[in-house]
Amino acid sequence: MALMTRRSLLVGLSAAAVGLGTSFRVLAQQEGLTRGEAKKFRSMIPGVAAIQLQEVTYQPGAKSSRTMPHTMICECAAGVLEVTQDSMTTTMNKGDMWTCHKGMVETVVNKGTVPAVMRVIQLLPA
Image (tube, rainbow, N blue to C red):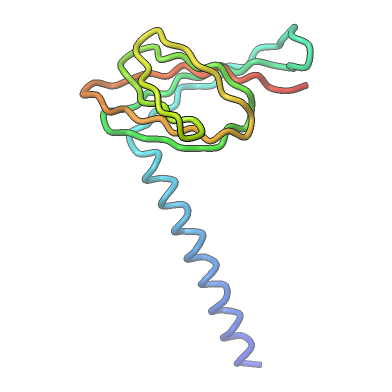
């Protein structure tokens, strides 16, 4: 019985170490990002139940990379951002807009020397 308990403990600790490693990678990737409060609005667009608006500030050198949970419209509201979508990289300047589809992987980096702001408009499905 003691051997089973020891094995269970080792398996549990291994799983926890993997989970912590993943958490630390996510936190390190999010370092230098400030997410503003998300505001949600009802939508009159067919198939879109709500629209969620949020601003994300990227400090110089900050980076994020994630799979898009919804279709989105994004705008570089300040600064300059390097946006990579499906291995295509584009430099977005203040006022530039782009779109993302659900499931797409997008990486955003602020390679500039001043903070950059990305405005994100998510189209939440009905």
